[in-house]
Image (cartoon, rainbow, N blue to C red; front, top):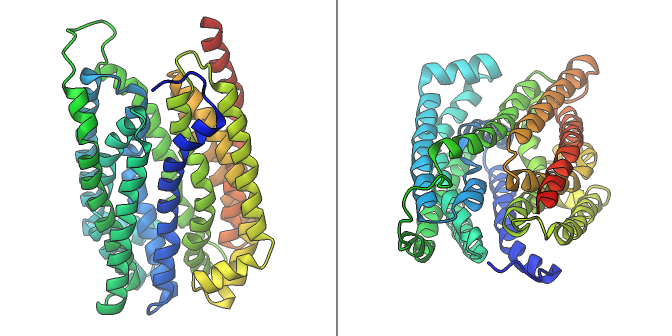
Length: 440
């Protein structure tokens, strides 16, 4: 991709399909929550869906950063083949983890003893987990090919695949709602799995031309600069630990919420509130791969990417503030998401607390793109570790010391964790930037 004369318009065109992909994924949660909320026993099924999704996400976490690894490292035939083999190993690993979690003794230990859910709610979670067993590996498979699509300037294909995923997921959920009499949590789990499996297949087909182009490149022989499994390991393990920590905190949040005041209500609205915030967070998530792809070998495009990040910072923050502090919040939670008036009123205060989160996410992921491009991935693990520690400390303090409700405690903890992570990353990203630019 030609990185000379990069303009705001070109950055926007490159970024929009990635943002659209994240936006569509962000809409999955509200759509499924809205369907569950209109089915039998919505409070229990929303809570079960939230717990099952949290557990599935921690199983998925080791493979999420394959997209960043592929975007950064898949430079030629040899590096692509090494990354493909590496991703296959990871996909086997996460599938085995899902199967292990679904085994009754392990599941009872995690959900019954650690989280402490009642038996009827735990049963809903268990069946949902079984339905989601193929989900993480399908995500890992398509994220490898997403990375090479981004590297080869085919970001629109990424959005096309997610559109297919949304379509199949929506059809599954709607058909189940009208024609199949099963709990809402099962509907959501099955819809997520079917959608992502079809997306993985479609992504591989759309990436076929790029893969053939890469594989047709002649072997260059073994050089000291060739990508090795050792290099992949040292680059990727900190990234994997980062996502394990980041997603691992969700089940821990669930555990804390289960011990909080108004626990069932908090567990019920958590996926609904988080889904709305996630829509705005998606703009920041999608900017990480933009930074990796467009910074340039000598970070010559840093200034232009920074200016675009400022637009995203204030734009996402402003939109969430507009929703949280106006009647739009009631419209979203009650009319669109289908929450009762009681749960709607319960959801608005934590949403207002999280107003700053989308802007902070843009800042965080732009810094992460700088550090990944500079091959300084260990700093990402440390920043996430600090964020998790601050979140857990905040949850304990708010729930067990201050006696706040679970969802309000989660909102405060997530905000303070994001502030702590950004504070850690800022000076390190600045030093990495200065080193690369001085070396140039």
